[in-house]
Length: 570
Image 1 (cartoon, rainbow, N blue to C red):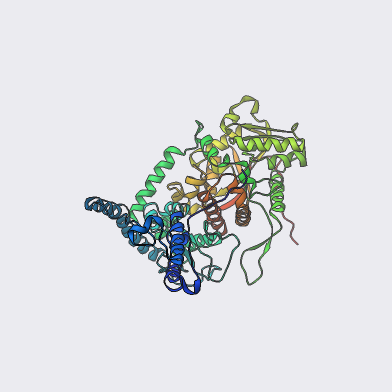
Image 2: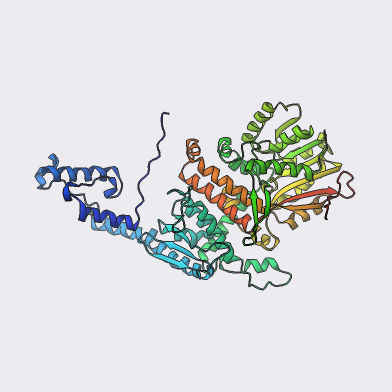
């Protein structure tokens, strides 16, 4: 292939249509200046030819050969609407029933819904005719004082939301029905016509979260999950009856087809995400560890006039710091046997073998990840210390030779692929392979307890489209599963959720910076939108602590190898 060129038809705005008409009526042919091109009509090749013919015949005053008998310079555009009356009526009725009527009904429902749901901040919908539909009080929300403006290209956008709610919004973006614009007067190097402003997507999700979590609401005692379920329109889809039905259908599809069972369900779900392409992931991951999980930055408290943390250093430095943290929390000793469950591209296994001389066994369900990880092991000359295998963790734990074999077990963001109904099986498996004085360290994306009951009874963009069958468990769900299925006890917790927001922001920048490379791999506009939606969706979740990332340390009662963590205070 010499060169790959991406072409697309122009998408006209209301202002560009007005400008096009002004050129045709006010400037065409004046002072010898002529305009022609596909853009003068609908953007098709035929429109470019026709506009060229019109200019050429107007200048020469000679008709086209095939138009001489008509008395015109150029044959008029054929009227495709002239057909039998019955066929015209059928087409009109079909269009009305399949598009016009659903759009009219759903537009009214969604606008009514957003008026109830968006009460703080500012959301604007910019329509094709230039009109703007506004929601909210216009006040500053968090650190964001600018309105979030969604440019709606196709009003089927309203139908998607009205019938599928939050998944409908995701699918509307994936289909190119809308993008989010840059704030007025601002620019962003990542912004383009395909994805819009990805930073704006993060702002949109944060606006939704701020309106969902009303700080003035009084919570009922003993039932915080119920408070969340019925808190406001953004949670319960108030007024969108069709959306509730659509959400039910999505949930049933999720439960029936995406369960992480040992009988192939887990393998299918892992393959759907992690086996997309190793080259795809290298386009945005750090270039040294290849860790596809939260980094830990050098973080300091923000200045007095700001909130949160200031993150310093590169992504590469932050990922090395995370690997050191996991091994430190496991209190790994030289020469120990380590099991890496869900080893990814081998970053943790390689580091443990290099730094401590550990004998590492890694297990995964991703064939693509294993292939690249083994290449990295060979390149590092550590084949005598590291062994990788494609096998389900439950199958691995049942092998007699693995009983009590490992001094340390580390699982870095693998628990999300286990599923709520299988959490206990994970702890049972660890119990089988862990030595008497062994330690389990788990890095887990978690859902706050107040939202968890609602979460496991529903579906969302992540566990349906990005990580099929995924579940970010609550801390309580993890502890309860460990109690029910093992003798492991929680010993220590670190929350690195805000670091994950910074990690995702950097991944997104790198991904969009390498857009040409990603497209050469065969990924199209839809994929670019899906991946940007995924990264901004998660970034907003971690930044608002709607979801968290925890490092958890488990051991059995009386574990002699676990030295209690302590701090020195002056």
